[in-house]
Image (tube, rainbow, N blue to C red; front, side):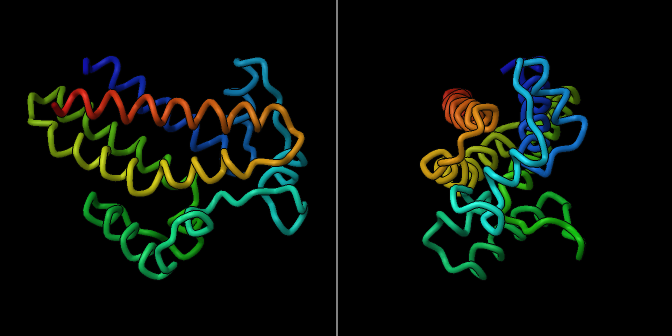
Length: 176
């Protein structure tokens, strides 16, 4: 992959992460460019199970068969290995937005390593592993369980799922 495509992947993961957190102006702007309009109300109807019976979870623990403590330990080890640590007020480590932010970070590290002429194979393998073991499980679960009527978030979920599958395929091809 070229440096430009790695940088574009990194930015895409950042945009996706913003979309799956409670809507901030940046996420609204990103979607507005695609002709979609999101709102706090639509977010809660789509993803807050305390608000709507149609809402689906954005947490991997809802879709992964691993014990929640085991899942958290694995995620926190992944994050810690790359120098990231969770603060008390942070979102839970299995939240889709957190996982997408981590992919943004890993692809950013890959871009910087490539710019310095360093080997990027280890970072590509880490991304492949993280996508397979965590992100695909989470986005697959969200995609399969999305029942809300909001078309903007439905489109976001489907686009994210497609992008993540395609990105995993590109990474696998780059590693070969």
